[in-house]
Image 1 (tube, rainbow, N blue to C red):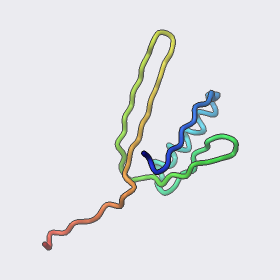
Image 2 (spheres, helix red, strand yellow):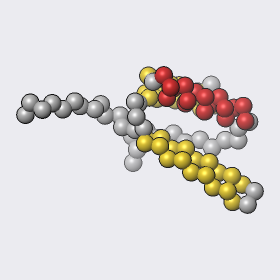
Image 3 (tube, helix red, strand yellow):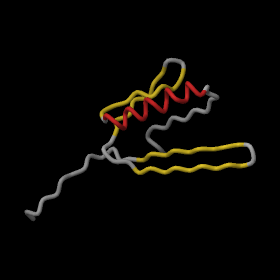
Image 4 (cartoon, rainbow, N blue to C red):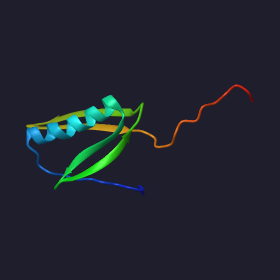
Length: 85
């Protein structure tokens, strides 16, 4: 089970979806922390990594299109290794 999990399904306008994607995009571009809007004035704050594993999926089923973007990264800090063993 996850330590923290947040999931929300909601119908958004194109503009509302763009605000969420823009916040995530800016977070990846500049690094640091990003606040993602989750509705009703709330936010989820994420620490953005230097590298991510990305998965992209598009499904077209009749007249319905589904686009999934998944980004995964570790919260553990990378430890530097030296050759002085």
